[in-house]
Image (cartoon, one colour):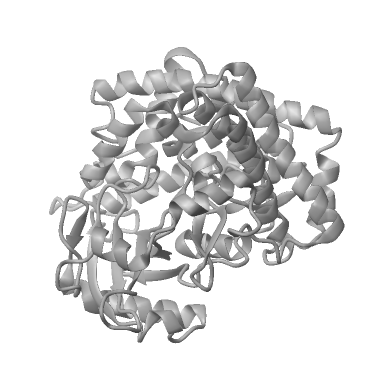
Length: 490
């Protein structure tokens, strides 16, 4: 398998009139750059899918994680070019901004390069129980968000990479995320980072054992009244009055639309397009007009610039919905973000379970993993592209890692491990897993001490490897490596 190469070919098969011919003799239309990019990416996904199958079957093969020196540099470069090919070819300003951000911050590099991380795991853990995996577990992908009634709850909050995978894939990604964040944001020593990661894994296993015994996962939820101290503080810090939030951050003086600034670019001529999208969303989700959403009337639309890390550069729109009072004090904002394939696609061990494609996949993951979640989480097609939707809320927030002490780092890691366990435990209740999952995970994680230490050692090794990758990326970025995609000329 050639690492990181996509192919463009010239042909000498021409008719007398000079037009290219197919083998059957019919004229062949030149594909657009966008279609070529999609075909190249799909080819790489299928190549890695085959590699995953071979690894799962026990074949001895060379893995990306084994590459060193220049070979590793070119693997990192080609993987990131491939992952951002559409954004690079569209010359999206967000793509350049993202590469600049990744260059300046190692934790952001980890968050924004999930494909690189998971290609190092291709085909691993085929014997482990399968769950509806979040796919991108790290300390800032847990947070406060609205539930189905618009009230704040705490849990996993980013479903862009969801896919059915071994439960250990989420634990390994999460453990590595806590290791890197505790180093970069918390400035903790290696010994203390081990304690933080251990708490994350122990919190997961303790909660999973509880679900195996009591089966309370469908009813549990972290709320203001029942959360540990570190999460109660997050609830308090995240809370903001809706009226103040709308007028301070979004609305123009009339209250009839978005206020333009560096982040918000109003697109008032797209109201009809997004009204259709909102109507489709309501129909697909099975609700008509929630009391707090008035008549579901779209007042305005804007592009949201500069948001996210992994998704930076992908089209993202905010849609303003008139609230019941009609005076812009209780309006609702729904976000629509273009969906893409999961970074884990083709890399996980073969499984009979599938979550669907693009936005439908994301919605399936949210429906499984967040039992009390946002009713506006959905999937719609806009101008031929797949978009996922969710409600923006005054209290949607994640934790400020800079404010955590060593003690609260451990407390927070333990709570996040438990929240991840709840989302996994729902895989056989609301997802497609057709066997009693919780006892299987508890059994697979024995002996407990060995399992915890294995995850911790994986995180330590992965973080050290990614730190070296980040150095290679920064050097290549400075040399202009990500201004173009890979091509092979012949």
